[in-house]
Image (tube, rainbow, N blue to C red; front, side, top):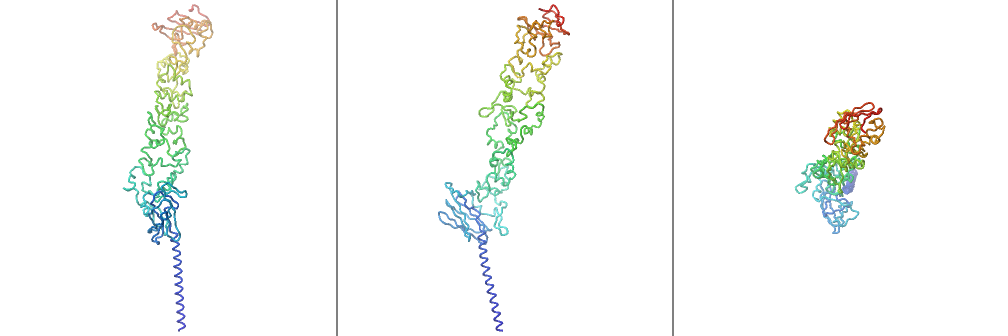
Length: 586
């Protein structure tokens, strides 16, 4: 029994020793493990290492396991060492510290040393190995993590963003914000942390990124768009979204800057003026985006379409006007060759010459001046007729080129609105009546040839005649007086006493010569002939008023080989080319 009892006691003692040993080992393991966990889970989130600040107060924030209860933040600088004790809540800590100019070392008491170096400067001295950091001027709110973050999930100390729980707009802060009509989405939802990091960043206004890259965090389609077009608006190319857009709010759609779109555009495009008399309607109403894409385009000037296709977006009812047989050359290229798409001092905002300051010069006849912009070079002779003739056509006098010409396209040559004679008849109804009702027409008038005798723009002669044509009934013959007639008619029919060149002869005796060459009493063309048309053959006139007093009638009869006339200025006479008639006037 004694032996048995002794054996039992020895076994019990061995069990107790093993338990104590295992307990000690477990405690050592837990101590080492927990210490390691605490050291590895401890982290300074803000400020970043090697960051530079221009304000003395700085909030240190970080994550740590709740088991530590508190952390000691150690600040070292040229003034010495200072310790701050910060409690841990929801695995996070936050502490406001005061920096000294120059380098400041921030560390946390832990088995594994955690230390960040920051630099505080007034701007006079900036070390190269530090990155400037911009922080919110209010440090108190950045320590309240739960206002923007979720607490740790499943033991993780990585904080996640949630919807912002506090508003940045209060009576004391940003009180003037939130009153305008067009608000940026994150701002409208009061999600300021979508763009701003209240703890600070290296970018102005502590945004998450700089320039367009910040916008592209959400507007990824805009990033693609900015590089997709052949022509890119220069603020877009530079990544300056805020040149046009307010990041928070404005009274314009798309939270654009300024009071109107035109004010916004004119902020850069100052050479475009609204002072002209005639303004293009979209420009006058301030709707620049009616023609221009604000970001990118495949067309020069950031236009939505090229050439006349842009204009036809609004002027579609005039499309047919651009598709006739003869298209005005500028129309085939670009409407803006003739029209200023913004405005000018000419009707239909036509382009004219500009002064040294780039502004359109006012003209009494702006339409004419607009046409001459090109036609001085293209048709110098016509331009000279318009500008320097002693006698100008009435539409030219009035500066109304479009009385006769259509500026876009036409089915008639010379950009005429219709057949030349039909245009002439609108203003010259008496001539129309003569040519319509009389039987025998002058050759030029048969072929739509008003311009064969008349210069349609201007001339140095009466009735816009191309050459000299005497309006006298009698006088001394001079070939120069009849240059117009001799442009078509053979001069021999007048100047050769004996000639077979004319049908008005008795045998070979030239009766034109006989009428014209009578000293100071020679008969001129209009004595016997109508200019445009007559009811008698050879367009012989029926009557004439001689010396403004006497009305003389003429009756002409044509035969196969000659003819005859009964006239008040001499006895009835006949002539025959094959069998000459006697008793003719000598």
